Length: 412
Image 1: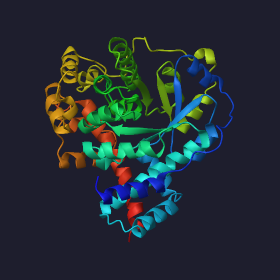
Image 2 (image 1 turned 120 degrees about the horizontal axis):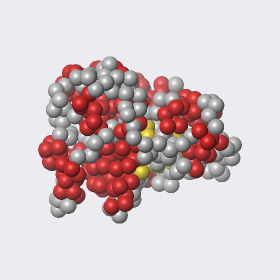
Image 3 (image 1 turned 180 degrees about the vertical axis):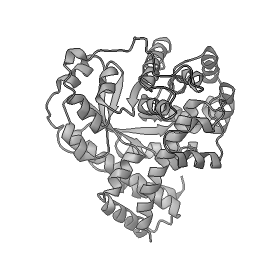
Image 4 (image 1 turned 90 degrees about the vertical axis):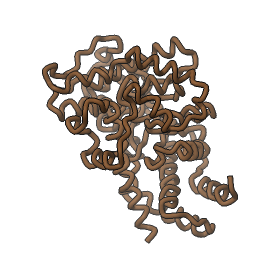
């Protein structure tokens, strides 16, 4: 590491770091959350806003997750303006010459740390912190920022890495270094099975609410239980992988939960990360603890119209084919795996229709459409999980751009 880079890291670490003080707060127990815990489910809150978390916090809650969208909501409130000002002033005071892009990345790093540390200080629990989307296709920069986030708060920070070819390879290295990883933006069994076998991140995700929504948006059925079916199938695949492969320890997070009914239905899953509104809906549902039961081993009939033109494409989200398992087996035994680059992994995975090579124009088209893709705009050769992941990443990029613009306004 050159002297300038080392000095930059030291300065930014000093700005981001906070000593964690005080005792864990006492809070009341909740019978429904206690029931989830008894069924083997860990329950997290999905928010970057301290006040929203405090309003619903209960004794059974064990972690929080943030992301680019949630961080942007906090930043647009103005609560981080002083952090932005102080960080820019310190960088200039130290004579560190950064491009505008580098400045924004570094200020954003400090902001994310401060948002997460507010939550850590309040609750003394793990908080997942997400990388800037601009580094998602760079193996080197994903490793660089992943290590730096962990260094700021190794006791409480879990690093969220988005699902890209470079992300898969980065989490393999970071896990070998002992960095806790939340591998995010997963939408299928196969995406998460690959992650578990390749790198065994601490956590993988299914964004189930968006899967229900994509069916509804295309009038391909009611959308009911589609995301739940993918989530439960992923849980079963992970349990099998943990049993068969001693190096696999990944646990599943059900993310993008929309309401209390989904919370109840997913009882018994490894982890639920729940937005405050859905948490309150669950707590106020009037259900008794006895009514909350596990559906992990149930046969799920998803709300997809079998006559719809898209119907035959959805099973690829919850199926794990022999062909894909053979691909994973071959990949994890590849002697060049630990020196592989993202482009090489993408090329190998093209044989199982994973990592479609979206052009810049494609990505702009996806971002302009929103977080739920238009499946009719893409041929069947583009897998739904690829489209869903890219739509999620581009949606986060759009919100990150808004956050970056607020930082940029302080540079003028």
